[in-house]
Image 1 (cartoon, rainbow, N blue to C red):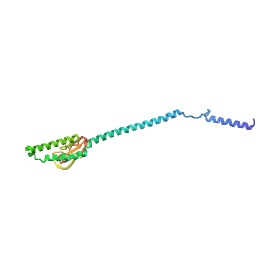
Image 2: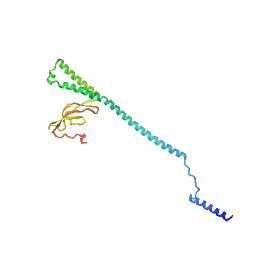
Image 3: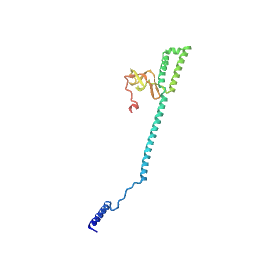
Image 4: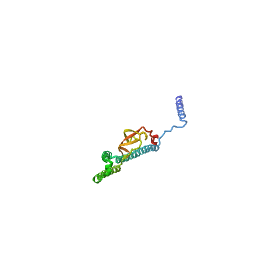
Length: 204
């Protein structure tokens, strides 16, 4: 063997030893990915995403159902709001007609006049009952603390005998429909008396 051949053999042996040293003395192995595990991971991710979407859709449908039920209930309760507000004018006129009759004339009434008064009173009672069947009820603020949400103050009345802010006169009856104010009561409010005690709701 010539000297050149010997040098070539020595170089190749050194390169082989260096490669084994770099690989920890073990021959290099090709890294492979398990296709089953990879597919399982993808399916798991898709399942989690679909589950999340399904839960979100169910929550949105439940919220929509509740909102729809609430809107239907409100529509049923307040569908007659405008009509009821117009009918209140009729109720006011009937009440004014009865108030216009002097007490002594009403007490002494007989015959056709008494029948007329009885008929008007019956009409008023029936009208009030009809309104109540549709959720319309009168507000009775006399003697109560003034509530700006339900009452409208028309004037103040000096009265040191009752707490300030007490309703002492009702000019026009107010009405509510369900939980909403259909028409505020027109009232006169006392002033000059002791300060009204705070209610538990106000204190809270």
